[in-house]
Image 1 (cartoon, one colour):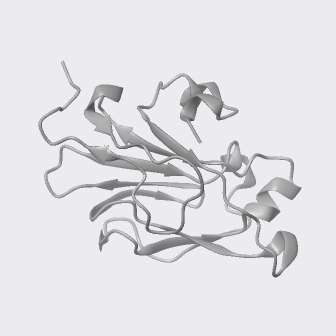
Image 2: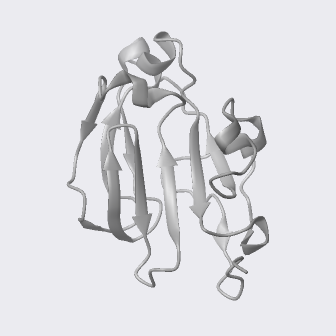
Image 3: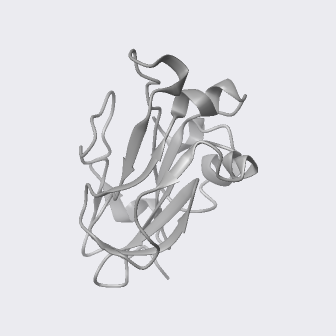
Length: 151
């Protein structure tokens, strides 16, 4: 889904940066408590890690991607989230970083939508935005190497 449909102005107004959002399915098996693994969107260094969000910086130190698990989930103080790696770890795209339950987040009255945001750039730097359903590991967008998006 597009970021402008995320129920948080920080994301929907592009204050953090451009990108997309994923709305995870709670899962048929296990109901509201079904667990999912949030993975590294790119290869690089895990420069920030919180139970509800993380940032991976590419090896070129010019491209960082923020993944935010749900909206207003910082208020949960880590409840329902399990860290699988430590901040500072070198990761490859697809590495599981956090185990969480989107259904539990939703049952607590918070949107379980997951913004995936390219930091410190502009929308012109991204292309190939995916539309529709995605699976873990699917490419969501492409960061154009010739466009930094910065002044």
